[in-house]
Length: 459
Image (cartoon, rainbow, N blue to C red; front, side):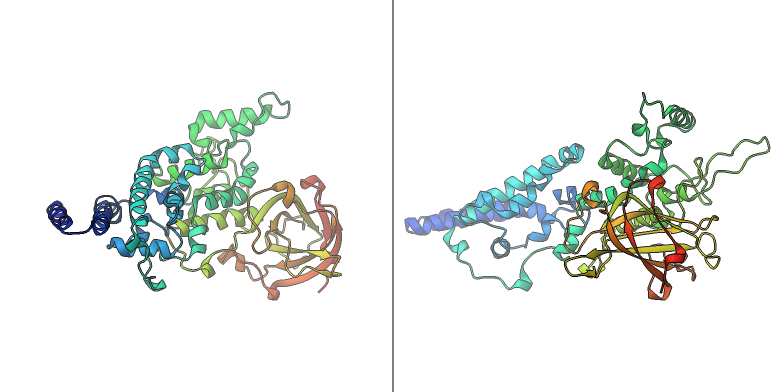
């Protein structure tokens, strides 16, 4: 029926042209061409049940069809009024730039997969926009009410948050930065084949790889490759296994359950049983993190955010998590934890910088960490820098390390065990234990941790 309608329209145009002036005839031809291009090349995108090439860069909240209306005139005006069409230079229209964003994808496989769809969308919109922009009548159509323009339902902040590159950046800061907790079993590329310091580590990895195969090597040489592998493996987990990334229940992802788990029990012969990848999970490498330490918090932060993104669970900017942590290699160590802090109690530290120009402490913390109380009454925490509001969260470990100087450390103690129910919770003033000023050097590594005693903390 659609082809018949187009044929009848062509016959009508042909008949009409015979009785029109040259200028009027040109206008009819332009409108006819615009309509034909819209019906033949734009509407198939609008009607297609398949997602557009937008999914290459966006995990949720946006699709090219969000910018299309059933009418060619309304679609053109909608794009024009949003600044997505350049009437003077149609080939420079912003909607075309957005379609081509996938060309900048550093992930070569994704770029190739979507190349054909992306090129078809680009050529269709370019041809149609050129014809419409050349038509004076189309150019002069009245503005459309803001409420009627075609655009994604979610705000721009949510759309940006759901971009793949933002997810990767967050993965780098929250997970990839902590990969050495999994050394050497899951990080083969970190093993130096000539280093005299790594022979035992290389042998440990060899034994595990021989026993469990390539699935041991889930940290790849780049964060992008690692994340791609983790996502792929999670779509079809082995029978009876929990997924590495559990989108439905992020806290039940093997990515956190394995490093939280103890080694398997021994069988009757004294040999360790096979590690379990279903509850109760066990881990051949034993515990690599605790539920109250900063690494677990950062892993779970990323998992919960990723889960909500892929399920398109964010509706407004207010829903978005801060996602402003930068990893460092600097460590805070607290000694002399009082007896009133039971072993494994979570302790959080907020660190404030001194502003010499204002002769006052900065109102917001510049770093954060947390850790459990050890049997030796110690608390260790690797610092995470906190990005200032509006600051880019691109990882630059050199810039994000805290410089030496005067700092205020505030300690919060989870005596009510609220972190057990909500591991991502930031403790409140009700949990405040005390604070102290320190002159910190902030050297890197646990052996050179910046130390303070709990006896220094005052209300």
